[in-house]
Length: 236
Image (cartoon, rainbow, N blue to C red; front, side):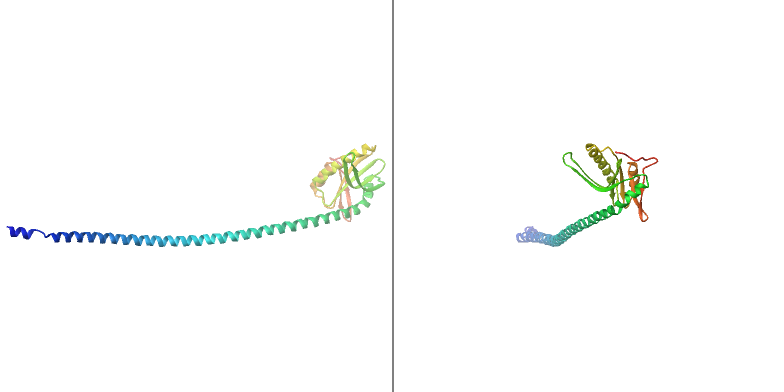
């Protein structure tokens, strides 16, 4: 029986070997998992580096785009400045041309105004451009053509293309003339007219409604429209 028990008893070295082998297998599995984790980390690190490179490239492209936009904005501002400069120069030249054209129109219209108004029953003996500078009473105004006789005065404002503001300004001018005339004992009746090279229908109607005579081109000369029927000449 003792012999059989000896045969059934596992040697101590065998137990130790089995334990060592189990440990080796566990370590091998752990090492395998560690290697898998390292490979995954290496792949993640590689993807991170790729992402960083892509981000760096995107940032570089963004900076390039910003520089290009800044350059474009600078060129746009320069272009705007140049355009504004050219527009100012054009406006100045246009204003000078309009002024010279206005002066030319005055000299063309003035000699014929008296004759044209005679057709409407007026007899004017004087026709002049007039400027009033009364510093004492603060009255300053200019009249392109002032037609006069002993009873009436016709103040004509001449514009290349009259607008509503020009008509309203002429009303204020007439009021100044009336005030100035009263201060100097002038009891004559003051009438007003607006002359234009180009007269839009709306502006023409507005001028007639305010009681002004309207002077406009007609053929080789010009015609005068009297504010009558539903409109009436306004006296100051």
